[in-house]
Amino acid sequence: MRILVVDDDARLARAVRRGLEAEGHAVDTAEDAAHGEWLATENEYDAMVLDVMLPGGSGTDLCRRLRAAGIWVPILILTAKNAADDEVRALDSGADDFLSKPFAFGVLLARIRALARRPGDRRAAVLRVGDLSLDPARHRVHRGDEEVHLTPRQFALLEFMMSRSGEVVSKRVIIEHVWDFAFDGDPNIVEVYVANLRKRIDQPFGRASLQTVRGAGYRLDADEPGP
Image (cartoon, rainbow, N blue to C red; front, side, top):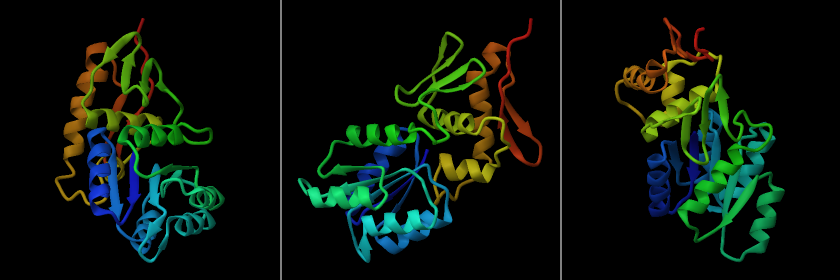
């Protein structure tokens, strides 16, 4: 998933970013409401985490503006401890959930995963393409009955491609969702990860589900075994 974290506590934001990246997610951060709003409107995110108190505004006001602009990405707002008014304002602003500071990172991660699985989102509780399945919550992949072991980045790439199954996805879009907004490395890194992912999910099983569409990008389709 590609996640936006807006929090003026630089140390907390760095810790959250490191934790999410370790789980294979792409993360962008902003330290104030204006920068957060710009990122949220200029990029496509799978989830957002907004602090309730921000320079230049509040997370609830930012959430309200994003909803008014037709941006319905799942949003979690971080509230002050034991501040019931913050929690009420968070939900009234259009947020999907809230979490009081301080919090355990594992709880934040579980909340984000739960938001991504809510009805109406493109992600089901378990993603399935043919006999390939991916469980985001348990971080497990299976081809049929056999478990496939992936690195965090391979897992993130597969999760994104399965969420867009049947669609042709460009390198640029993959980098934005599987790496992050600030990635300035060689875009050919996508080719390397696609090749390695094929060695895990396709080649051992005689499949060709992860396809290259010349000049356009990549597509993941169901590829059933032959007779």
